[in-house]
View 1 (tube, one colour):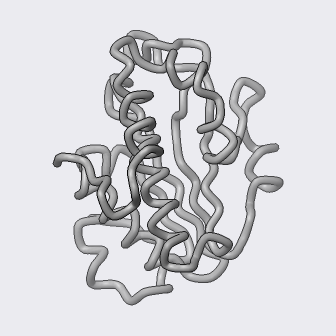
View 2 (spheres, rainbow, N blue to C red; view 1 turned 135 degrees about the vertical axis):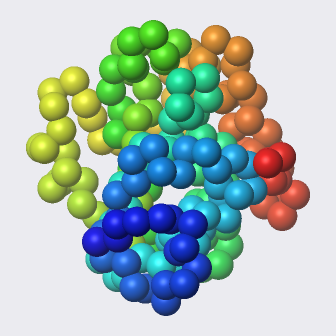
View 3 (spheres, rainbow, N blue to C red; view 1 turned 120 degrees about the vertical axis):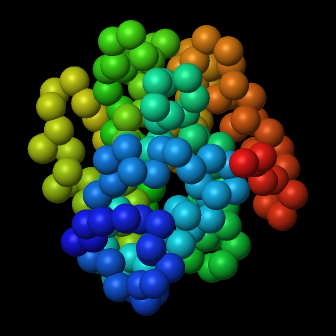
Length: 172
């Protein structure tokens, strides 16, 4: 279990983290800094390791980092590690006064390495929450288009989907 300042993650060896939980700890990272951090976290996960973080959703629900998470999946796949990692979103009611979509919004990301904890985690979630793979969630463009009132989440996701991996990076 990792407790502490995630900015010091580089000091850990690859494969050293069994479990890490982030609560508003990395939400301040944006663009490439966020992508690089998440890729490094994936590198640091041990086989069977899991990382749970509420950073899939920006602080006040104005943006959801779906494009960045897809970019991370694509980069891992390009490295040959696609089958090693599971990316799942915890989806549930939005926060009152923050999320545009009050009925359903991505609230957290769960990344596991060489393990799928879906059947363990799902029963622990409240009935109004569900666990869905990132890939499955990304296929539902109608839901994604209703996440924020500006359309930024869908716009960024479509830009990521349309770009070659080595060309898409977000401004910090």
